[in-house]
Length: 369
Image 1: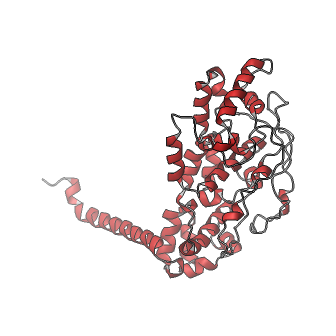
Image 2: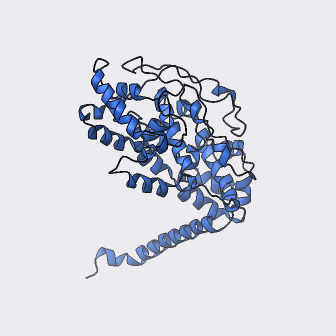
Image 3: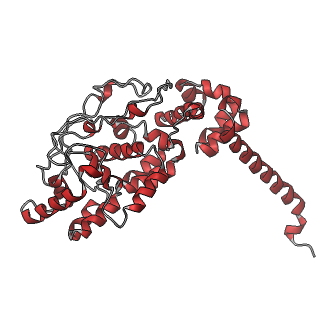
């Protein structure tokens, strides 16, 4: 007696074969994405790139109807993406434009950044958790923020698109991006350095938020450690921001201002770990005048031969969070201001003028809410 599966097996076999062929065809197109210049792509490769590599299947149908080759894809303007492909999100359009441009420039560059290898799942889940801001994971996931997009983010993007309104959280994210830049966006290099300092107090600039909590517990302040969860305090903040000092750290931990001995203990422990020899900076770690600009810039590592529309200069570190103080013990309000960033067009990220940078904190909030 034939069961129902056997009776319909020819149809099922034909259907599964068709699905298998379709999957194989898609994989072949994905391989072409990796090995063939975009200008040589055909329609199927363009669609596979959009669906699999860019994780944007919602635009595949419009792409199939309008974009028949890689040459056409290379010529698309922002208006074409919005009106022709229905890409309404400005961050989604930016992601596509960055990737389209990068597909050609990466093949010619001698010193390749690995930003393209950091997909939006890693950014939203792993990276935000590492810097202690996993509460923004869904917003980053929705906007498909990948490594290339991280490298283009500024304060305006964080506020307008990603719901990051707290000033300190903005600073924390920008300094986390700065650290990625310093390791050329190499996830492997970053993980290797973190593994080496997991059990010893070295290389604190790469410490995750969780590693900072571990250190706080190790110096016998475990009753305050959990206050740093989801606070945005991580190693790059402690090392790269000169005005985030022991007083600010004590306030972030919730150590009462009257606990002078505990605060002195924290300051002494911090001075032994967050020393200039362990940081990228070459000046004194503590007592640094607010607003000192760093010479370490993203522009200094640009490919001099490139002409990228999105080739924005790296924000000077001293401009990211200037003049932090902890006079307000609760840090539960927004203090200070980030000025002048509205003077550039988000569709033209090349020529951000010097004054269009993060400016002038008089004080800071640190909150895990």
